[in-house]
Length: 96
Image (cartoon, helix red, strand yellow):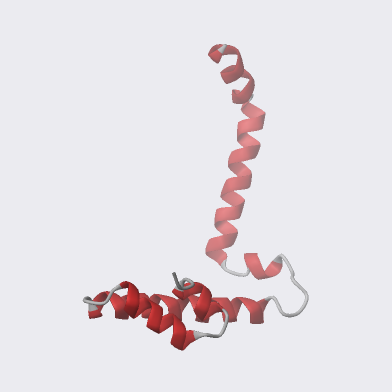
């Protein structure tokens, strides 16, 4: 059994990854191409992530995007309101 195509592509063996994909789906060229495209997207994402984290890693990289910042703040606010409303204590009492 060969290595997975994703592992092969992640370890700089793209040609072997393509061959394994063709071996896994011998009769479906469309599925082969979709799998190869997904692998290429994965490789590109992994390389961009390495470049981003190459220097000093900062939390600011995570919250630079306003949508991500909004999601983090929403999660924090929900946790704060949950603690202030004492719903955890109420749920503990009523479930026993």
